[in-house]
Length: 74
Image (cartoon, rainbow, N blue to C red; front, side):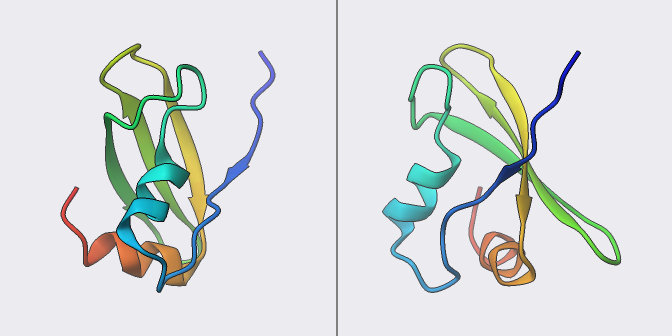
């Protein structure tokens, strides 16, 4: 099975609606997504699961993006 690397496309100071759009489901385009943050010493990811269709994926984050999500309610 081929796994693709997805990189988040928001800046740390972006409006919350742009952050939500960046984490929206790429399968059905729903914005109704649950995410959890995984951070280790050198990498960070948001594990996203769509409530509408169940599609799950990992989205790689920069340190600035990880901080933004860590300070925001899921």
